[in-house]
Length: 111
Length: 111
Image: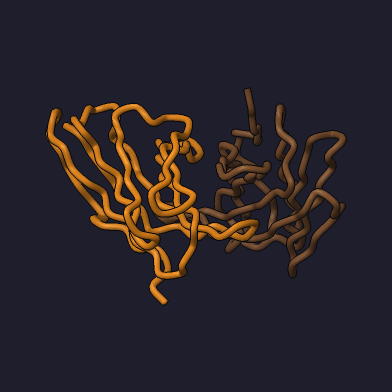
């Protein structure tokens, strides 16, 4: 069956450092992969989309890579700030109409 | 634009009661989905729809019913509430290969 794995352990990181999150998927052939941010008590908010023919995508301090051979996406937050503290969810999207999410990784940036 | 609007924000039900969670979007998106999120966990897909009159089951459909009579509305019905359905429910809408927009969530407690 299809599976999406994100590190369930919280990532504690010092302000200014780079946070790196991993999203692994199995039994999927995603056409693209999305990353979302979720703050406590709120719905997820879209951050980035990367397509299968793209290796890397950047948006401000965020960078996403997509390796379809390894079936993995990496999400980087550079120069992290306390305001980046949140849970980050990945969502590989295959052909078809279902959008399913990994369990999310909580990031805590300490000043 | 309001985006995705969910009502109610909070609800307490007794076991066995039924209710409908409302979801409306004003972006003319064809795809709409319902998710539940339990503490410390990711989003699990309950039901989704690819257009008016078309619905399909997600990962955890049991105990829930949906219909899609218009593009804008996608209500979720709990047929006979159980304590296991205590959760936060999110509705989302998206167009093909684009970001999903989420509502603010409905926090449901079944006692």
